[in-house]
Image 1 (cartoon, helix red, strand yellow):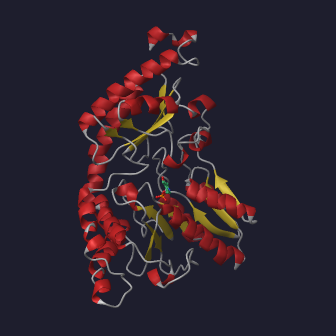
Image 2 (cartoon, protein in one colour; image 1 turned 45 degrees about the vertical axis):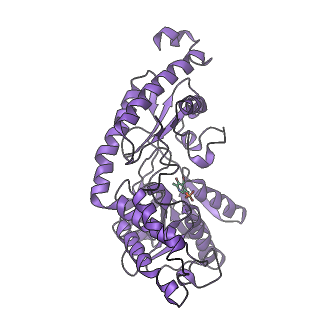
Image 3 (spheres, helix red, strand yellow; image 1 turned 90 degrees about the vertical axis):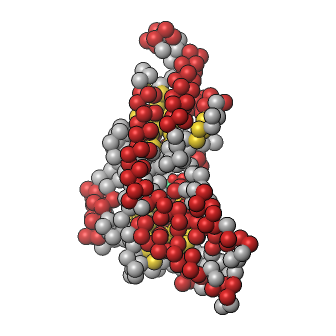
Length: 398
Ligand SMILES: Cc1ncc(COP(=O)(O)O)c(C=O)c1O
C-alpha cells in the first residue's frame, strides 16, 4: 500500500481540478491579453477563478489578487516591494517577522539585512507560537512591515492573526501573512483579520504546482518584482498561466467551501489524531509544541533515540512518505530550525518526523502507517547507540 503523509510539502491535484485545466492546453489556448476571440475565450473561466480566490479568503471587491508563480514569489514581492517603497524611497528601515517563518521570508529578510535593513525576528514560546503583545512591543517609529505566518509548515501551529492584525491596524503598519499552510485547513478571512498582504500557493491545497497568489488590500500599492508587460494591471508582468490559474481557482473553491473545512476539522483531524495517539503510545515520544492550536492535518512528533532521516528511510521502504521538516530543507541534515527555535535539546531536534494528511488520506492507509511506524521505531531503537544500549532504555522495555 502506498501512503502519502507529506501533504504540507505538496498535495495531489484534485482530479476535478485537473479536468478543469485540460481545455486550456490544446483547445482554449489564446493569450488572455490578445484582442481576438482566442484570447477572449479564456476570460470567463479566469474571472470565475478569480471570484473563487476572492471568496476563499473573503477579500473585498476593491482589493487586488495578483497571480504569481508560487508563495515564494508572493513573499518576495511583498518584502522587496516594501523595501523599495518604504525603505529605499521612504523613511522607514525596520521589518518585524518571526524566527519560524518559511525560508522564502527569512532568506529575503537576511538579504535585506545585508543592505542595511533592520529586522526583528520574534521568538516563539514552547508551544511554537507568539502573541500579539510581542508584535506591539517590537513596533518602532520606522517599522515598515510586519510579516507573520498564519500557520507553521512544520508544526501546523496557528498564529493569532486577528490579534496581530488589530495591533498593526492600530499602529498604521501594513501586515503581511504567509497563509500557505492555512488555506483549506482553517478559515482564512482577510477582512476580519485586518490583513494587508497575504500569500498562498495552489499546490498546497490540491491545485497545480507553479502558481500562487498575493492578496493586496485596497489602497496598498507595491512596486512589482517583475517588470515588463501590463499583465495583472502592471503589478506582475508576464503572460499568466491560464490553465494553472483556472486550476488554482477551483482548488481554492473546493478546499475552502464550508463543508470542505468542516471535513478537514472532523475527518482529517480524526485520522491525524488516530495516527498521533498510536505513535504517542510508544515511550518517549512527544508532539513538538503540544497539541493545541494546530492545523487539523499536521503533527510533528519527536521519537527519542530515532534519527528523523532513519525513520523516513524505513518508512520509505514500506512506501510511506513523510518528512523531517519542510521539503526545502529535507536534504539538509542540519537540525530542524523550527525545532531549535522551540528550545528543544539537540537530540530532540534531530528526531522529529512530520506527518501531514489530506482529504484524500484513508483509514486503511493510517492503519497501515501505524503498523509500519511502530515496527520501525522498535527496530531503530534496538540499533540506536543513544537509546537502546543505555540501562534506562533496555531493549526489553521497547
Ligand atoms: C509556510 C510556507 N510558505 C511558503 C512556502 C513556499 O511555497 P512554494 O514552494 O510553493 O513557493 C511553503 C512551502 O513549503 C510554506 O510551507
